[in-house]
Length: 213
Image (tube, rainbow, N blue to C red; front, side, top):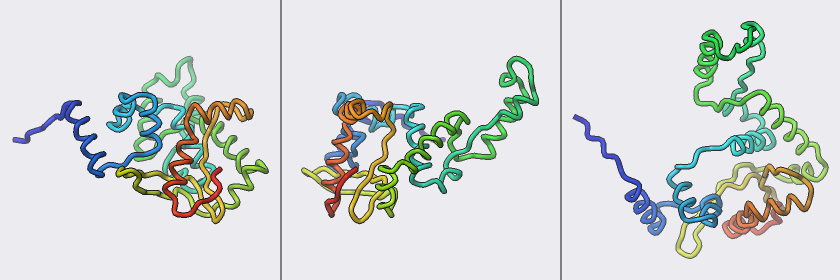
């Protein structure tokens, strides 16, 4: 008979601390940002107890459409149900058996991909196009020739890791979605989300110092 061992949370936390101190596990910007909120938030993040939010998913979609548009169809699929909804008709077509069977088939045919609602995709696509066509951001993007650049380094006996969104000969770039592009509001978001911490970490871990955008 198989024996299943379920590890309790205290044991998981002890193992987490052991792995961090021994160097078996690396710290990241996200883990330190959560620790700045509270040790409990840090533990939840490291033990993957926090679920992905709609805002987090939206950010990754924009990221993909701007930096790696050719990868979008490999990672996501847009659940465009306009036609099936029109065909079914009625007051609540999405509650019918026919619709549920259709949706289950779409998910099965796109196994391994993240489902995206059409309105979310259209909004993300509009933002991505604006970023690629805006004079200031286009200038920075044009300097980059490497994407999803993995980074690993040690600092004060701890191991760290990260991923630079994009990099070129004279720049490092990280792409963020914000509530507003108004300078003062954007500045508050940078401070609140501690993006300056990520910049400092990635510059510390990079062998070559470059302007960070």
